[in-house]
Image (cartoon, rainbow, N blue to C red; front, side, top):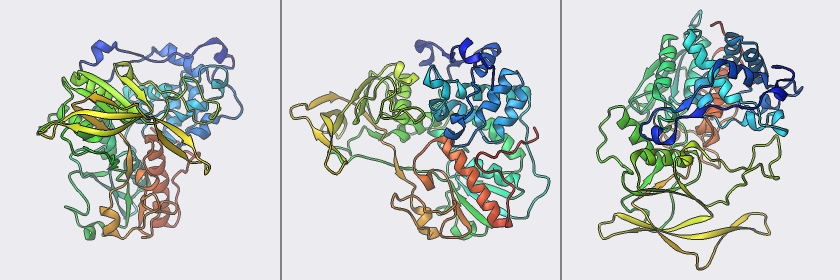
Length: 484
């Protein structure tokens, strides 16, 4: 695929970024696209490797060598057809996916892997710019009505696939705008919301019905919901993890998602009463994942006095760890663009106490250094280092500790079983109630956007099969080639 000797002739070239001083003054996306000739070179780097590990590493089963080859040949519309045959929303994954495909790229054994994610983004953006991406309405309707609860990537993917099968699909979203975590959990500097609006306009033109400010089980009855022929639950894992730590109730200890959601809503003109701001504050972010990184970038844009990041795990190696050789997902230090904007990162730190003043306002954190020891039962045990306590000044502590699972309002009211991880239990995406299906983080737990899209697609196939007795919807690795 690509140019046979391309990987020898061209090195990897990534997008550049607007300089830090300029980009932290606003909330816009700040990547600078490569020119078309450079993108062709990047597609040309794809090797004729025989077994494309990138393809199997992608949760969607994207046909990566095929669209790389089309980019190499400058057949951009064909590249788009191939990409969209397996991925409903490459404009999201091309910006936000951690790219497990790149980590398993065969070229990565000897050199920098092919820039698959950036190629993907450029293909879909070229498609929008050229007008190639158009609504696809089904030729006929089945007469079946399906409710999709949640408008994140899993819900949107399920809705589009079911609509393509001819069912009438209604998507319910409890917030005031469509997009779920894409809308309010991802900062604008990573995903400008016009990107979501552009896609929603297409989905509406295809015939999908969207209803916002509908919280099923609260202001929309379960009886009304059960009037649909089938239901797909895609509400996500929204129960935020907290800490059993003294002083956790102090004013100034805030869940990261609350902080990020408020910022995005305020950016789009919503009035937020007592908005949590990092301006002029010593900010400590507990949790070293993507959400923690998003809090770093947002705090810097607020004009924080200082930004510090705690992680209880050891600092990963800069290069790929021997414990995670190719083609496995690597244990490796990840430094995001937000970290590069300014952040004091600390590993093997455990928070022992949130310290507040007599008004209950957070003024500091007490921490202790820790180490991990493997026990005889082969389970890691946290060991505190005696005498390593430290007091950190802190006005705002953001908890970016992930999520424990979905909220239980729906499962309780619908009588659904949950698994040992408190996720909604399902076999082939079907719950213990035959007409109710579930997908995304509700079913598998907190995961990636690319997995959510995959789950939504696969769940739609099972719903279609349940409703019609058969299905022509594609399954993973067997894409359909839509007419654009």
